[in-house]
Image (cartoon, rainbow, N blue to C red; front, side, top):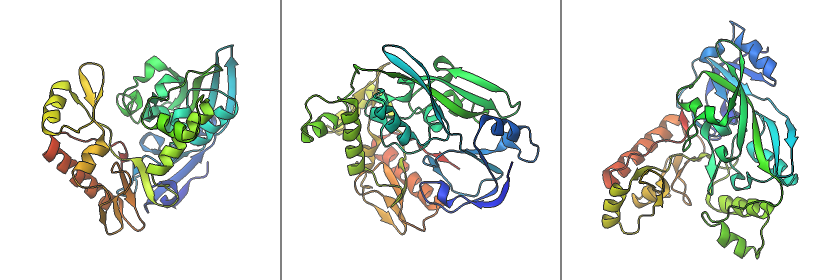
Length: 339
């Protein structure tokens, strides 16, 4: 192990916030993770696990070890006439994994193109976009227990997936380190999901009548690039808040007061309301404050223009939450992990 002291994390979070890890360790294999767990010097049980840094807001310096997951590699485990099982290291870039699947004509993740972050963070957050979530293509993952160092396999039913939720954010929070993930992907002919958002409209603009999974990916990339700022140019973590789900009765009352409010029916008499719409109607879209603000094209994205602090971003987020609660009676919950 190569423990490093007082290590800058500015290049390891997409907000571009300056924070320092007292101890920093990069692991590139399952065995290295197990060795770290068994090392008293590392104290992995209380470590902060860092993937791509695309879903965190650093409001302070971490207290102890920051463990960077750098396990790489992609492996075809099994295939039949209709599906393949592909295992991918937790440290692999998510979008690069999507491109790898598209190159091999394996379907299921094309709607999740250009989502920032790593493969290991994908099931923890149950990432989703344009009508698709990770749980739909998830097969299993392997993770190391922080206390015992034991390697455990989790199947889909073990993960308790929900909207941007999993067992690793709830019952098993801070207990396991995800090392690799196996996906069950389709072989041709693929079932496409093009009904969500502006995908169909974008395909029409691209003059594509009979789309492939590669075309779906290109459409999603085009949409995301038109709405979301590139973290390499403007610090951000993508969608800062979750889209809230409210009872149908509450939505009906809001519809009376705000006839234009969008809503998407869910199970159990619930309706999902776009958080970006709520924030925009509260006047926050394009708001700037010194070095931080709300993106001019997407109210759901908080940004650091350079030199901003995590505290400043979090204070702005709290003000946004309060204004939405005051106007609509809806409590927004952060999608990012606030440290």
